[in-house]
Length: 101
Image (tube, rainbow, N blue to C red; front, side, top):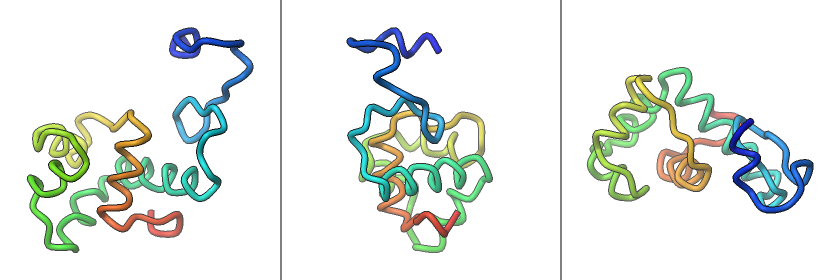
């Protein structure tokens, strides 16, 4: 919970949603997609999603603004994505919806 202290304002102005600090700026649909993208990453589904769309790891990485190595690590489960904006972009690129994960 140390991340909470990094934000200006009162601690109770924020809450944890889908494993991320949420300040109310996301729509309910974005929150559902964020949760689905996190679940896909946790379940090892990212590579399957990418390959089903015939996308190269380089293409997806460039599109979402991460290195191919980072995306590869996410696909292998070695690390997990933490940035909500990047995760939402990944969900968009891979077509991950709330019902898809």
